[in-house]
Amino acid sequence: MLEPADFADRTLIRSHWDTVEQQMREYLAALRDEMLFDKPFTEGEDKDLFFEDEDKDLFLWQVLLQVINHGTDHRAQLLRLLHDLGIETGPQDFIFYVYDNG
Image (cartoon, rainbow, N blue to C red; front, top):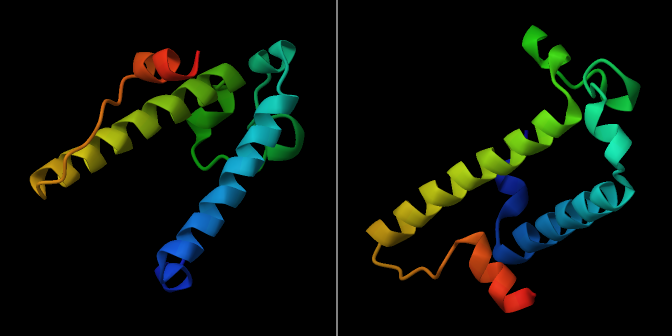
C-alpha cells in the first residue's frame, strides 16, 4: 500500500506514475501470445501475488482483461466526481483516442 504522505504534491505523484507507466510499457513489450494462457498466480515469478484461492485458476488474459475493466470503472468514478465539482471533462471513448492517434 502506498503512503499518502509520500505524495504530498503533484510532482511526486507524476514521478511515481511515470515510473509505473514505464514498468507497464516494459511488461507489455515483453508479452507474447503464448503467455496469455499461463496461470500467473500458480506459475513463474508472480505465483505468490494472489490473495484469494480463486485467483489460482485465472489465465493471464483474464487478469489483463480485469485490469482494463477495473481501470475503466475507476475512470468513470473520477469523471463523475469531476462533473459534480463543475469541471468539464473531454471524450473518454477509446475510439476518440484511435481517431486522434491512428
